Image: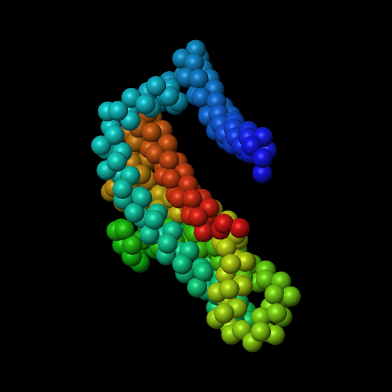
Length: 267
């Protein structure tokens, strides 16, 4: 390759990198700009129309709560975080194991899949008090509720992913005398990963909802308990700050799953 060709190749490479940087910056700037615009409308709208603080506090009031009551928020953040994380792992791991059993045994699927569907049809607000009565007001009931709310979407997506293998690939595996374990690890599991991570992204947000619902039923600490307390005490700025903290926890878990997806699924 001549010197001029090498220079041109380097220029094209640099232009490609700069174009990618501009696209990434644009993808970040647009949602951030939209969020800031909504916050400004909220801030000035509340002031202009003189909306009472106990109905809709201004964003500046919520920020002041984060400054003054941050230890209180963090004290209630960690129990909800641990309950959500434990429920996320237990619910999704159980769903994956049952999905593997369903794929390898039609009899098991026909017997237990309708039961899973029936459990999913029960509203979480209806089953939460029952679980609190069974497991008590401690952490266990909240973890079970968070696990239940994660379980069914992951089960359905994992079964669909494991069954999405092409017939040609399975036929080739039979011709090559591959065992069931080799078919699972080398064919079925890789093909199911996109389906699995789609379900995990949903579970990353719903597990927080499950933990908070459990705390509504019976808890002294946690973001759910703080929401109830601030509501009954008409502390609207603290209520909104707690809601934003809950949303931030969901975003944190969702981001963790997205990073794991990029690291694991490279194709």
